[in-house]
Length: 411
Image (cartoon, rainbow, N blue to C red; front, side, top):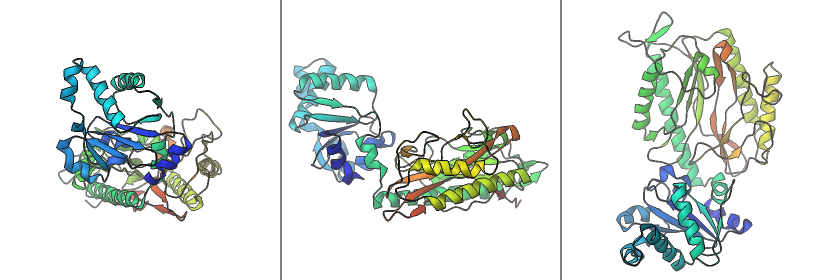
């Protein structure tokens, strides 16, 4: 949580955090967005240890800046026009403008750099500043940096936002199910009321309209994979393919608040009209694994233990897993989940084999997504909820949607 930042900075001996926000859209810059709380503005965040964070912003964006609740400083406090008179080279002027800004704010010592930026120009900028500011030491954390570690645990306000995104995501999934169910069978194909075959592309187009209607967006796309593609975890689905009766469909949807914000991630596996005995057995096994592991999750538990538990469950039922075979193309071939928040994948990993040292901590949010994949049998099954470890250590699913394989046709 944000309240952990000073403690984390102290642990790592970092004096100041500087978070670049040059793209003007917090949606593309999760570290910046974490501080400005989704407000779309251009700015720079400076957080000194033991002091509140400062937002340096454009005066044009005063209203958005005020909504962040941060200490505000107008960028015009340092006149770029005056600086340009003494520094005609644009890069030199930019360096001097930033130097004065940091000097006035007392930025010195070990300074951690964060944010999503064009690497070349900002590398050049900070190398120049390091030469001009005495005692400045730049810190670039390679993994589990201060901000991502603070983001690992969510505040009650963040959780309410994530619950809301989860509810709206489920509304969209139900609308897609109803859209399909309104069709009818013509041979082995699903057609609409006019007799036109329903394609995966048509389903995705409908889904995107429903996302927009529910103030959600899918910047990373959506998986709607049928038949053999359902047996390939990251196959997104052939949009020209027509919906077929009885085939496995892996529907993995991971939208976020429109304009940038918190993500939700859920997967359901469907079969339209009916399911074969083989597909039903595979589905029941994955669902059994999901329920078994969900019941075992606990605060303080190492994430690798739950991955091992999943592998043991599948292996006991005759399926190969990544725990005992590598490389592996069929069976259980991936890890159990990942953290989620302002990015689809955040800190807290459920490693496939090698222990990352991660544990489930109160306040964290992550996905739980076991699956079995058999492209040679034209099928795959994955089930996924977004899960929250409450402050008291109990586990709550943020995905209020049933797990049912077959979508009956009503048309």
